[in-house]
Image (tube, rainbow over all chains, first blue to last red):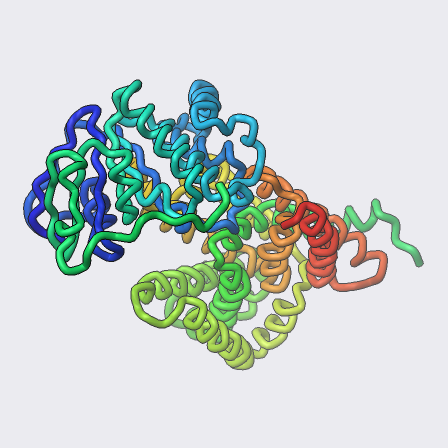
Length: 220
Length: 294
């Protein structure tokens, strides 16, 4: 359980949510998305156009999904009466894949892509929902540094050029600081905000201390 | 004397069509069971349905005495192609959906679903035998049921099977995207405004309908063979969910046709022949998976 949440996500904001593992960052995001009801207080949304990029490790590789099929899931909220993806959404799915640089991989099995590529496919899927706010849960976890940079560049680009509001949850202190314009910290069940990334100091994390700098575990 | 294929078709067309219909539809349901890591449902649920059918036989005399069955007495009921099958179908459906409901209600408990299903499977297997023994006709029926002897299928059973499986096929076709999303990524499904519990309930309904009707008409052996084996074989060939569904249904139809041919060529019972044919498809499926690096 986390408390003390007083948060507003404005248009074109880029918020980073940082804190140690198990601090409640994902719980906070799930509350904002409406996946968890708040025990106290309210969550008000001026838009229902939310894009969500979950942690890719939670997606079972036993599903023989192609890259294209994963992206087209982003259009499942507006299927035709007979359950088909509309042709316009099919074309948009290709554009979204192109936007993340993976249009040429659309026929491959999703589970065979590298961690970074799968992450970009999930971002393309979220973009297909035509979101006003993009929520990402640990998008750079478990990928190498160049891939982290590529993902962050893409997010910055979407935020600055297309005015997409971004909320990025990460336990990777340096990654979040490098990308976000505003930081929210979560630690010991409490939430606090920091005016700009320069205000983020290790002591704000309380007894648990700051998270370690990001490492590389997987080829992008 | 050699019997020609024309004569075989004339005599057994209902059974052949039932095998092909089951071969086309059951693997589609099995695809969902497989990717949801619930393949054991494909084995256990038909056993629950079989226990329900056996119970139906065991209580049939009492049922006729107290409730009645289309105004028939016990002997007439046993000879009636329609009333008895409808009555047994109700028992099969009640047992299947009861088991599914119980599993769903116990879902939050700490024991694993597989353990609960295994315990239920053991109990259902024992009850199938005991209920069967409680009725002289039921005992014979249980043997027939477990051997998957489906040659005696009549027009009414075929119509029931085709009606139910047409409904299952249509639901799967129209709702496949929703069912896939709620199975694969329920959180994203909820963010997209999908009703995940409704999707899960629809999948249970589809599975229950497929199993209860299939158990009664083609038998549990054929049913769990077609639910599990074609999708397993198809995985090696599939490069997408779409091709997984198509390969699975295609493999099921090939297994049904191959089973019919094998059955008459080698004088095997049709049910086990269909399952063996489906099992033989695992070899090319395994080789294809190896070649593609799966």
